[in-house]
Length: 496
Image 1 (cartoon, helix red, strand yellow):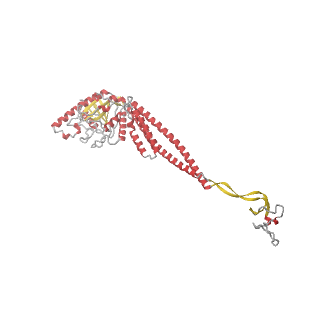
Image 2 (tube, rainbow, N blue to C red):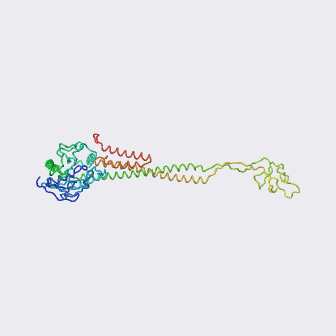
Image 3 (cartoon, rainbow, N blue to C red):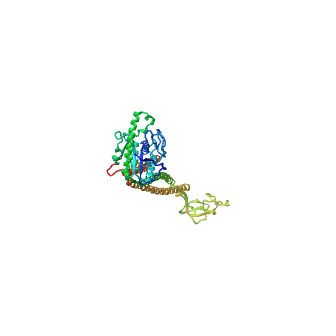
């Protein structure tokens, strides 16, 4: 382990990208020990000893000594990722350059959105590196069973490592030896990690404060034994990394772009679903308004009314009647005895006494000159006529016009809804196509995990939908999307 020199710190997310630089991407669950591993590597490359520790990344027990840039946040909280963004730690050994890229921890308390953001950071820095010699998965080896957090981390890793780099996977189990490790490698299936790519590190020297063991001979011997063994393990690790060689990292760029494209399409799906709810609710309101308008049309449709009208008709008679032109509806003398040849003065309906100067009709009191003979008489009759109720007719016309307007709006809105639903179905299939393309690069890409956040938002949105018909359509649409994801995650042998 001679000829150890260290390069000066480099700017964030920058690397010389020389052909002889071995870029190693460190990934793992929050609290898995990535930062401590970096510090062990620092001591390996910079000749650190238990009496003169070389610290690149500060911890709650040790301050930084080497002048590296770092992005350590809350050093006291093990549930939060202490690394805020990807950082290069560059070292040289025997003329070979190594760049260890520390990345934000996954599955911390910040949630899935933060994990998704960190995964994109990891992909971006891997792409920018140009080549990758190894992807180093750091796992706490004392974990007796695969916790939900570790399962999530492994699942995210499987969805983020391109197949071209599967042979360059290296697993480092921290806080343990080969005989004391509890971690089951079967948790990584279907990934297969060959024995020469498995390493065990006991980081007890940096996991406890120096003052607790430096002056205790028994504890010091125990710490020193683990220290020397870790240095030998790192030596083997470096030889294996150089054997793995360089793999172009452009696959990360393709994955990142496709993931971003899928995320964009998923966000568009959420927005379109929300638009669908708005339009469907508006359609429901219009249909309700159309029902009301229909009721109004029906209630005002009886604007015509039949009514009985009395009128006078002249009915022919076989006899002579005396009528008054001033009172056409009256018969002054019915079936007059004088016939049609004698003067009216002989009609008994008139006052014909000699002492009366003016002769008038006893019945209507009109002058004799106002009367005439006729072979017809006025008869009162009744007929039914249709009368239009103008106010009711006006309300009927208004209701009919309102109904026609609403029906036109319903027709237009139904057309828009049909197009939107068709567009949603088309976009859902395009998302599936994009995922299939991504699976060509990363066969373990999990669409279910990628879609989990989107489905959660969609289900939350559906919870606020009150219309049962709209809700049923939304639930069915979400179920169809989930069935598509299930088909994508099913492997040829039927496993998932």
